[in-house]
Amino acid sequence: MRFTGGEARGRGIKGPRGGGLRPTSDRVREAIFDILGGRVPGARFLDAFAGTGAVGLEALSRGAARAVFLERDRRALRLIRENLDLAPWTGSFAIIEGDALGALDGLARRGERFDIAFFDPPYDHPSHAGLLSAAALLLAPAGILIVEHRSSTGVAAPVGTPLRPLRAYRHGDTTLSTFALDGAV
Image (cartoon, rainbow, N blue to C red; front, side, top):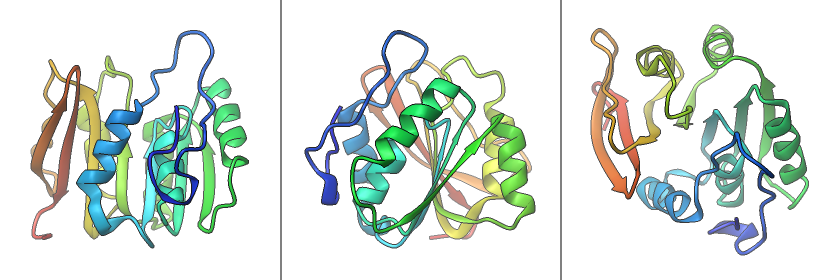
């Protein structure tokens, strides 16, 4: 795995050894940042189910002002810390260890808002609806949510949330579904 853009472009990213983690591929990461375009510089970025941290690290490399990494797996947390040591970041970062829904709720209670939220839950995660409801509370008014999921399954905004679907981008077995808040451009 390598950084695909920004100040760390071309540098390697430490990946997992053995099973259990499914890092976002370089090709899909590049697609994510093509979707985001000029939104990244200066953005507040949330990388939920961060794994190796590759997507949030890529955001920092591309000029995000702040990245928050959310992960519960201790092996993955170690990789995130090691990967954060790879380059001099101009943006700040925080690592939150814990269960996704609890951590997302904690961020919302503290009033945290993100311009970009990226969720890459395990493909068999039981509650996409709960995650999307939590994400709606964390998006800045013009923010965007990207959810990585298996192409054979859809991800829809739960009824009653202010999220509206934008577009889904398919990349083989992986799809990136994008959402924004109602009324946001």
